[in-house]
Amino acid sequence: MRIVMLQTGKTSEGYINEGIDLYSARINRSTAFEIITLPDVKNARNMPEQELKEKEGKKILESLKEGDYTVLLDEKGKEFRTVEFASWLANRFIQPGKRLVFIVGGAWGFPDELYQKADMKLSLSKMTFPHQLVRLIFIEQLYRALSIIKGSPYHHE
View 1 (tube, one colour):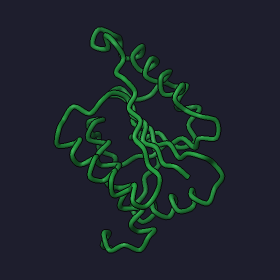
View 2 (cartoon, one colour):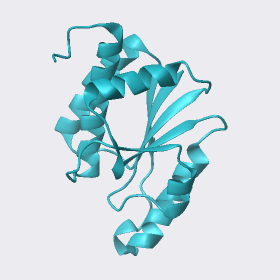
View 3 (cartoon, one colour):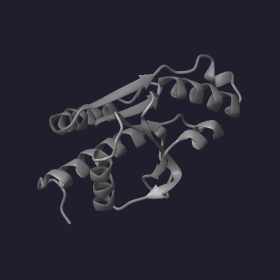
């Protein structure tokens, strides 16, 4: 199974990009992983929040493929401890499906249509993080979960 992190808009902070590149390379040593970055919506600053969410959501939906298992990274989603996430991920690997797609939306979240179509919602914390920082936090947790599955000493418990 291929793991995909689908995100809206590029990451503008250099330190976040460095961390994402580091963990992405580590993940690719264990499993097929790719980051898909959808272009920013044009004139987003002049757009009402709901319209922006709808346009970002449309781009996300167009990027999904038949058979994808989609997980929205959302503050209202299910929370896991890291070892629980690793167990969940290991179980996903034995399920049918071509891609496991983790979706990081824009600053305003997701439109209702995407919430309805998603297979799961996952929360990294009850706290709110900037959406660009969520990318780095998530990719580190993905690497950590994969290291637990492999039995690597990266995670300490």
